[in-house]
Image (cartoon, rainbow, N blue to C red; front, side):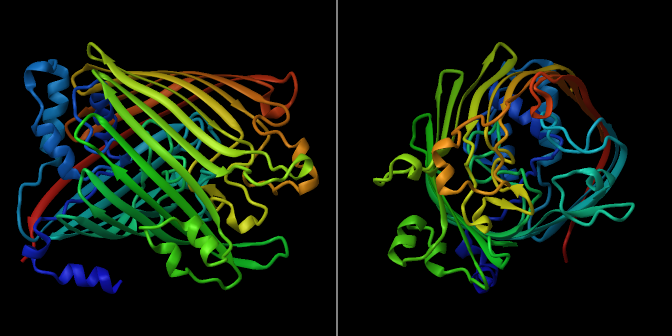
Length: 495
C-alpha cells in the first residue's frame, strides 16, 4: 500500500501520462469489439489479455479506415467512439448509470452450463470514474436480483435484493508500468474462452496487480488472499494466490506469454515474499525455500496469418517426472486450448477445442485447490472437453448476431472432489471419468444497441445424452435469456 501511495504522490511529469480506466468485460460494447477483432476489421490492442484499457480501444477505433466498413459497422464504430472518448482533461469525473430488466431460464451467467432457477429479474447501478492525472479510481456498486439464484455467487442471498461491487480499484499508471489494487474481471489467454490460470469465472475479487515493461515486453503479477479452507484434519488453512507472467509481443504478428500460478496454504500461514517476486518462478522458490505450495505452469501463444488469428494455450498442473511407477504414478493433470478466429467478408468466425483433465486444479491438500468460494479461479469445471464453432455478423444498425454450435463431453470428475489416494492412482481415469454426459448446443445470441438502450439475449436447445451421468438417460433443454438495459453518462470537472 505504501508503494501505491508513493506512485499516487509522484508528480505527473514522473509518470508521464494520464491514467485510463479499464473497459469492463460486461460493457455493452464488448461483443461488438470482439466481433470487429475476429473479423479482422479492428486491431487487437492486447491479444492475450482482457480487459482492455479504454484508451487502447479509443486509439484502435480512431485508427480504422471508414471506407472498409459497411454502413451498419461504421454506425457501431461511431457509437462506441462517442461513448468511450473522454471529453475533459485534468481532474475530472464520469458517472455511468444503468438499470435493466431481464428474464431467463436459468441463473448462471454461462448458458452452456446453465444452472439455478430461472426468474424475471431487475438490476441497476452506477459506475463512478475519477481521473487524477497519473491515477484513476473506479467504483461500480450495483444490485441484481439474479445474484440470489446464481450458484456461482457466494455473497449474501437472503435478502430480496442482492448486490455487490463489480469494479472497485485504483490504478496508478506510468510509461513503463502500472500498479493497481481492487477488483476487476480479468482473463489471461485466448479471448474466446476462460483462461487456464486467470479468468472471470469467479465474480471479481480484490487483489494487487503490478506490471512492469512496455507494450512489447512486460512482466505482470497478481497477489491476493483467498478464503480459508479446512485441510484433511479439518484445520482451517489461510490461503494466498500469486500469479506471474512474461508477455512478449515482437514487431511481427505473434504474441506469447509464459505464466505461472502458485497457491499457498497452511494454518495461520502468511504470504512469503519470495513467492510474490514476479521475476522468478514460484516452483523454484518452493524448492529453494523447502516450502509447500501448489504450482501451475503454462504458455499462451497467438499469431496472425492474413485475416486468420491462431491461438494455443497449455497448462501443466502436475506431470509426473520422477521414477514412480505402477500404482504410485499420478494421472497427468493438464489443460489446453487450440483455436482460430478470422473473417469471411463481413462475417467473423471462431473455432476452438479445449480439454481439461480429470484431476486438474485438484490437490491432495484440499486448501491448495485452485478455487475461491467453491468457484474455479480459472476454469469452473474439470474433466471435460469442448468443441465450439461460432460466427458473428453486424446484420443491421447496431445489431449483432452470433450463431453457435458446441459439443461438450463432461466426465464425473470435479476439482471440488477429494483427491484420490495413492492406491487408486492406477485406476483413476486421466480424462472423462465415469459415465460421460454429452451435450450438443445449438443457439444464437443477439444484441441491439440504440441510443441509451441495449436489448440482448440468447436462446437455443441443448440435446443431452447420459443426462446427469445416468447411462441411457436423455433430455432436451430449451435455454434462453433476454435483457433490456438503459444507461446514461455524465462527465464533469473536479475542482
